[in-house]
Amino acid sequence: MPKKTKSSARSEKFSRGDEVTWKSHGGTAEGTVVRKLTRRTEVAGRTVDASPDEPQYEVRSAKSGETAVHKPSALRRK
Image (cartoon, rainbow, N blue to C red; front, side, top):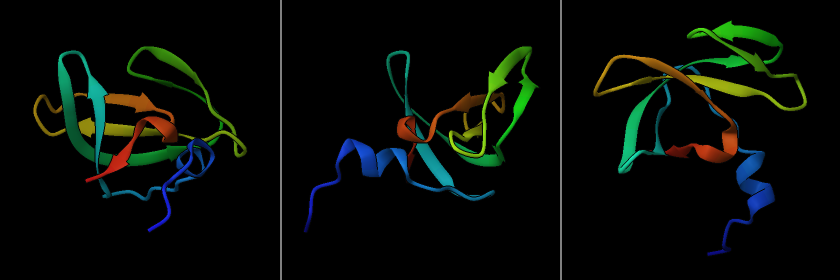
């Protein structure tokens, strides 16, 4: 089985409802993709500079219910 490279991880695409994990303070967090961001947007009080070429994903934490935004390279399918 070929090993994923950083470039292939960055190009990973996610869809609404996908269950994902990401590294968080002190461990790994789990949640669900809420939406794909492809333009400058304000989410959770932060401005996110997403674009069609460099999308980011809004995710909802399974533990806290809060949302956060992550680059595709930070997310892994559960």
